[in-house]
Length: 224
Image (cartoon, rainbow, N blue to C red; front, side):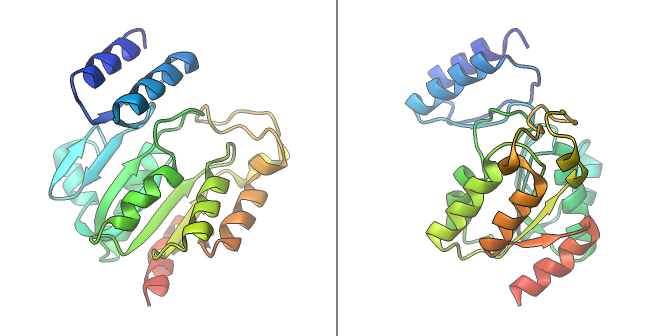
């Protein structure tokens, strides 16, 4: 990823206000420089190491959903938002919702690296303000503080949105310090464990699905 920083700086300097960085293996210090430069210029960054954003039937940035035919099959316009650390699982969740007759408002693959431009908590105000979103589904993984930040945001801001979360990799609690899949998926202490994260999510009133297949039913329950 030798040109990511320069390309990002060029885009930001030329007034781009939404920047999707799909590239992985970008050195962390370069990502930090990009994020600080973006903050100073009022640019929203999604990624790095993500598949992008989609508002079904309206717009798509990045490779999210794959080829156009596959994207149209998995994603349908609707009122359920999605945020996911995994690009592939963003589409998997959308597909399960679509099969259950639940379309999506906007889906965001936020990125799997430890340092990313927009966390769950940082994107929450946008979904909260979106009149086209009635509920949220979140796919997360062990490692990192993002789930704790989300739980705190939901409690402090008394979110209007019903939220359903699914956490992969619960087995990782037994293997601290090991990295699995995404670079951000490393359990380094109790706060990073799946058990601790799930407890925080539940305390914030977020419904936790044990399996992907449970997500549509939980969304319907939460919507009443």
